[in-house]
Image (cartoon, rainbow, N blue to C red; front, side):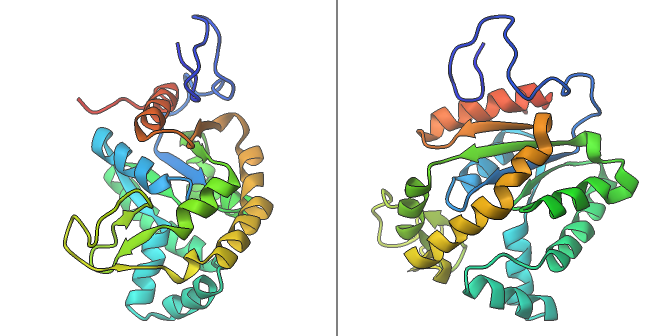
Amino acid sequence: MRCCCGCKKKENESVPGTKDTKGAKSVKIVVLLGAPGAGKGTVAQYLLDNYDVVHFSTGNLLRNEVKNDTELGREVSAYVGSGGLVNDDIINKVVELNLAKTLESGSAILLDGYPRSVDQAKFLDQLDSGSLRDAIRIIEIDVESEVVVARLFDRKICSKCGATFGRLDVIAECSRCGGAFVKRPDDEEVVIRRRLQEYKSTTMPVSEYYGSRLLKVNGDRSPDEVARGVTDVFRDFGVKKRR
């Protein structure tokens, strides 16, 4: 047997954090946690390709508000431009509206970029009169801070389709749509380090809040190794791979 970090474990040795996963309610929401640049987008795509889940990137939801120039979108722009985290009231409202619609369809949800604070985690647990709490599981992608800084500083974003490319993607234009690359304003080193500090002070306590509902995967490895770690975690969560 292998644990979520890829090491071998004895046949009957349990993985920390999985004690209450067996026999629990069917998982309806899987929260994807990790620092900016930890590789959550890559992991999310792997899960979409291999599991029957609906992906909710709160970052994309908020960017849609900005693109449509809504009142919420203008507030979001002020936070993102300075490298700050979006106000809880704004993000909670966006998440609640979108979750309600999808849960009615019976689909499982992969929630990316939320919750980022203990207060947000408590808000999520209390939705639908608290009935969702036992159906929420968390996977955290764990990467060292200096690796994150290097990744984000060299990151390229397609101006047309939004695809993300790293430092090793030595191409002149987007391989998906041919669009030109741009650098996000929050990918400058000063802003990156500020975002990491905010993550450590506000989001890392979320790991402690979730306790046994959370498992970690080492994200500072090759994509194939990370994928194997994610697969192991989802097996512990009782979520079956698509055939």
